[in-house]
Image (cartoon, rainbow, N blue to C red; front, top):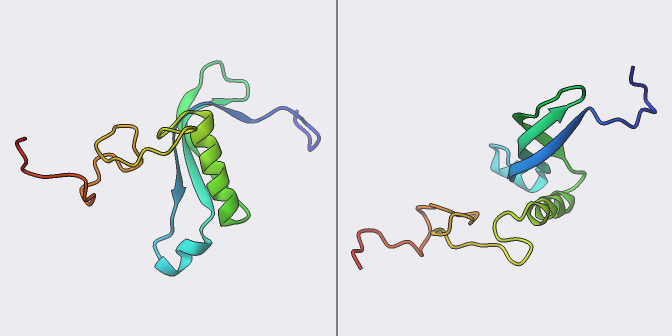
Length: 111
C-alpha cells in the first residue's frame, strides 16, 4: 500500500513521441496558459507492458512551461533539438511540418 511518503512512482513514461503546449480557446487566456501535453508510452505501477497514452502537466508560470517543453525536445531529440529547432515545413521533424500557411511552400510548382 502506498503512503504519502512512498517513493514509488505510479506511472513512468517510457518514451515520448510528442510534446506540445495546450492553448485555451479564448485568445485573452493564451498568455496565461501553462499546460503542456506529452504523448507516448506509459508504464503503470504493477503493469508488465507499457500502453499508449498521454499526460497533461501544468507549470506554475509560462516560462517554466517553455523550459519544460525545450527540455523534452532536448532529451528525446525532437524537432532538431538539442542543436536547433527545425522550422522548415518541408522537413518531417519540423514543428511546422506540412503547414499550409508557410510562405516557404510553393504550390503548383513543377520545378
